[in-house]
Image 1: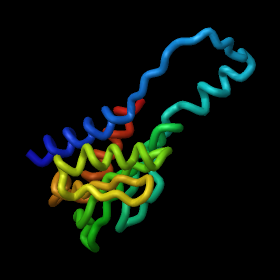
Image 2 (image 1 turned 90 degrees about the vertical axis):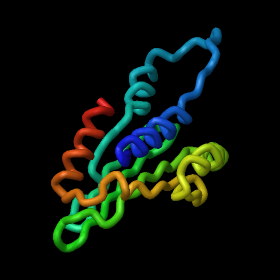
Image 3 (image 1 turned 60 degrees about the horizontal axis):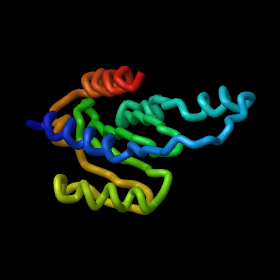
Image 4 (image 1 turned 30 degrees about the horizontal axis):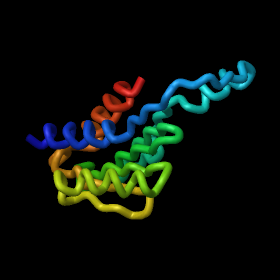
Length: 142
């Protein structure tokens, strides 16, 4: 049940980030095309990696940054895990928050950041197990 809630929230966060644009007659500058593709690629990295904290950041340029942050006690057991989405625009963050707060009472909004406490999905896991889960998330992006 815990993982079902986690994946449902992950799907909901991801689904709200898609936008559609109409095709037009605009002529693209071929010289800048490769640079634009490179800049829009999703990047994934561990941004914190200490014995008491592990953080995975998935950067989706122009849309949002997805940040999974896990904190551990002295024995390496999970004490808290949060998922934060830092949107490019505050109005998008407000809409995401409005949609998610009904399904998850832990969701908060702070400017362009929507945060959810997902500790329940990781309850009792060790740091090594969380790292494996984060690596699985990282592999799913590519």
